Image 1 (tube, rainbow, N blue to C red):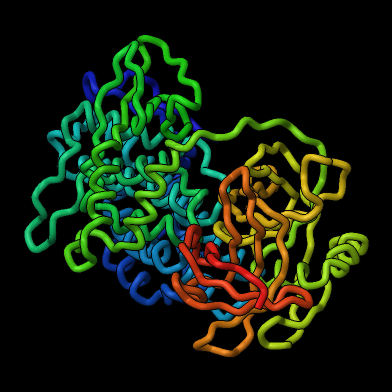
Image 2: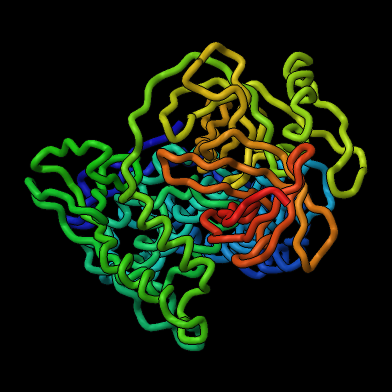
Length: 535
């Protein structure tokens, strides 16, 4: 059962954040260890990087603490002790860390879910601590431990959101609203800025900086980012994030390009004018202005690599692309009730395009999976074709949904084949696309946004004059109305501009020169072709 604080705070005129927390026990748990020395020993003996053991053990302890009626001082000390191992697990088992584990797909999914539960339980403990301090009449401007609890509540709310973003999962209920309201409390108390580090310890980022980092990421929609990019950007953006600023929203203020509205009482990400903004005149709202940050990111990208040391270039590119993505107008969409079949990954696309009878057989055979030969190793691996619902579509792409236990095998930035099974004459029977965003909802559906790549895709084999070994790719023809030339889809960095190429398409041998790399993700690249002709 979750309780909510009243808006009348014992801490004077400070706003009281509405935080969902469980009720405390009316009795003390005799099994719960509260002595600091004993807790430290237990934590030191815990095999932290063995998540199958450490995560369930930490979860059990935190759940007990979060129901225990103890003083602010004792709870603060305990939560500080447990925070370090929780944060280590959170950082160690992101998507890349999980994929390094020598465990099954099912066990990997269980560990991911349990790390998410651990983040949520740690976050819950700090929310209880914050409510307890307010109830005791504490003020973060006067009480150092209470001020720190405010910072760590912000940090743990951010981690709770980050785990959902990096897992492409549903956001924790109320997490954005709670984050906004904790920020509002810190703002009203005048404690957004960092304080000097305690003796022997380095200074930590302030509440305002921590909030800015995560709310900026939320505004940029991490579900559009490729695997691991969300966490990498969050960890790298710190030095230049203050180029964005937050200021009070005034009734009648018209948002400009690069500005987002933050509704402090809503459980939603910052919105642009495109989302439709209907705010009451007395609404608690702030404006997130990213225009100067966008200019800074673009200027840094133009500099030589050696000059740019504040943020890694790869993350800088992700940031600049995300800041500019909102400037591109979306095409009008219309609802659909059709179904399509989807094959994901570049090897799968090339396999089915080399012999489209395989694709037709697979569609007729259902979603049971087939065993085929790998294009590179000739070993037996499955390439599946799945049935998806078309939720809506536009001239640029489709929104697809399907009930699925996880998003294994689906990656933002990967290529997909979309095969139509209906009678939609406005859609090609087989299209090539790229996954632009991915997320799951609380109902168990996976949703993917697919941008279609114009042109009828054809499988080709190709080689360069410098390397006679045969490689596989996908050729897209010119699209004159869109001023698109021939394009070759390959693995990342396989072709560079100016390279001489020889391709085999069916019974024809073609020659071409590699042109501009106009599309590049972690999964594939698209290279325009010049001077394509028969050999």
